[in-house]
Length: 125
Ligand SMILES: C[S@@+](CC[C@H](N)C(=O)[O-])C[C@H]1O[C@@H](n2cnc3c(N)ncnc32)[C@H](O)[C@@H]1O
Image (cartoon, rainbow, N blue to C red; front, side, top):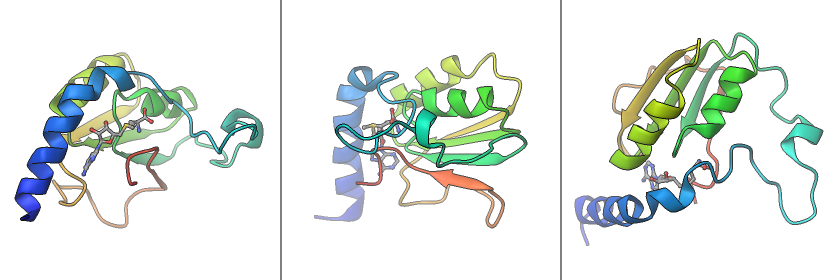
């Protein structure tokens, strides 16, 4: 199967299930019975940082980063529905918000060597 066909199939699947993942996991979970990010603070201080969320879904993790003081919030997601949800969720953020509807297999215009924090929660897999 060609890459374009796989991406089309993947996108269709995520459009169909986007609502089920609305605000599902704003913070990474490190496994059953493990401590939470709030307790472990693995991200460290976020204030003033430029962050990129790959597979940002409904934007709730970026909202968390904005509330923690991130300067710029960048997100990328394959799904039109997820990007629309993220735009709505992030509308009132003071930080600069840039969202791309794109597969992560392509670069839709992300600057290189620019971000302080790049993360992906349940999307890379
Ligand atoms: C399980 S959801 C997680 C969303 C969000 N990170 C969260 O934790 O709530 C996976 C997300 O990855 C996106 N996604 C799946 N494959 C992708 C790809 N190839 N490129 C970009 N986004 C993708 C889906 O549209 C979906 O929003």
